[in-house]
Image 1 (cartoon, rainbow, N blue to C red):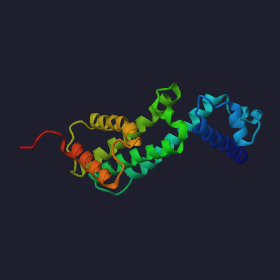
Image 2: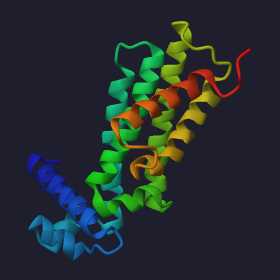
Image 3: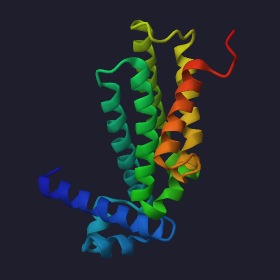
Image 4: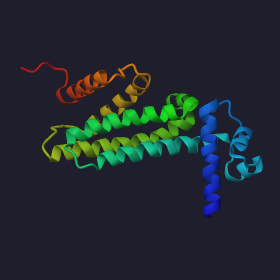
Amino acid sequence: MSETTSKTRELLIDAARQVFARKGIERTTMNDIAAASHKGRRTLYMYFKNKEEISSIVIKNEMERLYEMLEEVESKNLPADEKLITFIYMRLDAFKATVTRNGSLRANFFHDSWNVAKVRKSYNLQEIALIKKILTNGIKEGTFSIPDVDMTALIIHYSLKGMEVPYIRGLLGDSPDRILQRKDSVMNLIFNGIKKRR
């Protein structure tokens, strides 16, 4: 793919993302994307078969951005417990920023449409692998004692998925004091559990 071809393709994808954010994927047409990109429909169809293909790419690109941020956290030189908490909040904040940035597209991040489910499946596996790395390194450094790393990583991952919508809607508190309390609560739950200590 030549540099010009690549730039045109990226321009079309970004134009589509902006139109999806404004109108939603369902109400967007190929004509809308062509008009927003200042390219003809013929050009658009040279690069993409249909709107569904473009929406898949847009969502995939957003998920790749999220993964790169999380990968950066995992590679930081931090104690495992600090790294895990940083990872959790970076992940929630990054999801919130992605959803906010994409306006109407936000609905598609949470509805179980075929495109989103397919893209998120791949992302989910990558995220679980990063969590496992953090947990395994925590065991090696003596910070964590975990009998089943695989199951623990799955539980953390699915807990984070369950927190996405409440976090984005601000139901877990948005004031600085509430954010600190929330972080303390999450740290306490993850590291101490709920059982009373004797």
